[in-house]
Image (tube, rainbow, N blue to C red; front, side):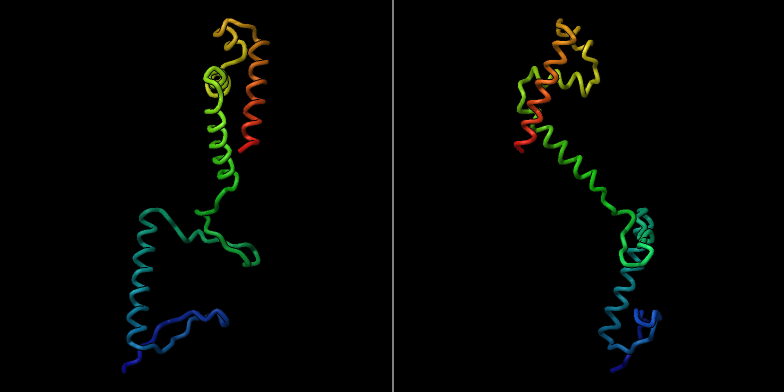
Length: 140
């Protein structure tokens, strides 16, 4: 059986060393090496660069820069979904007022003019609706 050599990184010595391997191991090694080179090219073509691997100053932890997840983003998405569910539970008139105030960014005075009631009345309705929403969110 003909032995072939592959270059292997030795973490202890921090050097590459030549190691004799069987034909079968050599074949799989070369396939893997080809796949890595091919994938690297594909990653660069699609601007997914794993070269952005970075670690802490002591080298104890590493993260791919592209895949760092912002916990706040996930939390905001969950809160947004819960808020949508709570809003669906409100009567349509309450949803309409919340939509005008918070999504269309109308003032209380503009809403009061639209409904033909006082701004103070709109403020009380808003506070009542927000209280309902708060209770619905606590239940979920």
